[in-house]
Image (cartoon, rainbow over all chains, first blue to last red; front, side):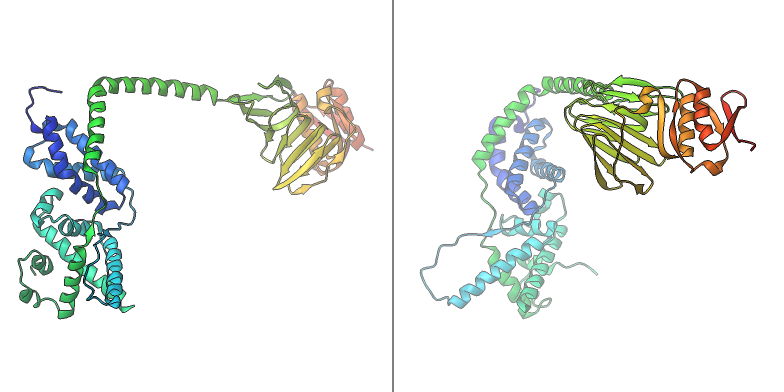
Length: 174
Length: 301
């Protein structure tokens, strides 16, 4: 389009590095929302193409939150929710065996309960909690990306943990 | 009360464990620790960044190159298609209507060469679009059909419907009275949730909730096609209504005869003869009073 534009996002290389830096987090964010990998993949691609088409308008230090806003809007258009199931890593077996079979079984059960409790969290709580726990994002970063205050992020994470504990307690009593 | 999200603060190392114990019990603290420990093992599904970037680069090029020109072109094409489609839809889905007034008969050919004879004061509506695959029409009044062989042919009426594949039959829908007479082949009549098969040479009639089994007839053509009306044990009011339709006249008669059963014919070509034909059997005479108005009177003796 306009050639005199020197905005870095219109530069192929800059665009690629911006993509590599942020696409995984964006993918995870959409996945925490909907639990659907195909939809998440599509939305990531569409969101970056929108960035490319509007590269002249992108303000560098607002680019990330702009990207997340675009993806959120795309998601609203394509609303299709399923249960969000976050899997556990396949941790290699430990060499030492000081854990009893009962302990291991109990831990498996606990993990299943946690998984279910996470899928039962409200969408905003799940997103804030998982972006912090899985993606290791600071409260401030999450707040910036989602365009909310740090206080709101704290509230969501706090409530997420309270809800998880309560739900797992309920499971335990059964 | 100021909101304090102590668990979030503690998770973010802004609050020590001792400080957190002011807000939560030992058990709760253990539960939170266990949850947080377990979350370390969670992972998001695998996302292939380089593959995704390639896809984005491909899409990016496709879109930037052709966008501007293509967009207008697409709009133009879409608009023309819409106009053509609407015009086509408008013309082709328009209903075709054939109707007759009092003292008027007509016949016409359907798109599949089937022939329809329409008796007085009757109306047929159908869609010419897709006629050969969708032979459906609506009838009110009386009509005689000579249907060419082909797909299912359905006559819908407010009282019931008649389906055939290819045959000759007559349908009457007058008020509550419904009669289907089959002259050749076999027709299937659906009336009040019942399906009645009417074979050639028989007739099915129904009035309101009373319907009879098909009965045999001797004619090979409906009488009205041959310019007379024939009745067999029909209520007198029905005969009078038909006479009024055929001659565009108004008849006054003593209502006590309305349900008297009448068997006989009247011609469509001579009013005088027709009036005699329907009055003499009931021992009545008639008097013309003004244009298109006739009164039936009882004989003096």
